[in-house]
Length: 98
Image: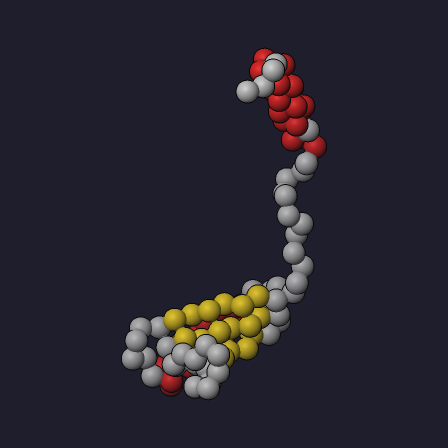
């Protein structure tokens, strides 16, 4: 047990109040704004979706993404290699945008 519990509680309360008074000076975000210039979108279709159908869906998604003025290019990858680390069929697609 502590020898002076009231003193310790008072010191802890003063430290918490002092920390709370600093909150308005932190700004709006705790993390800086990321300016990486690209993002990855992962899309999954229903099981059994064929490769041509996934390519058709992918071209529609690419066209919609390219309508945004901040997106210059879109690349699509459908499925993964069978001998890769994380293989999946044509029901999955990744879109890389810059």
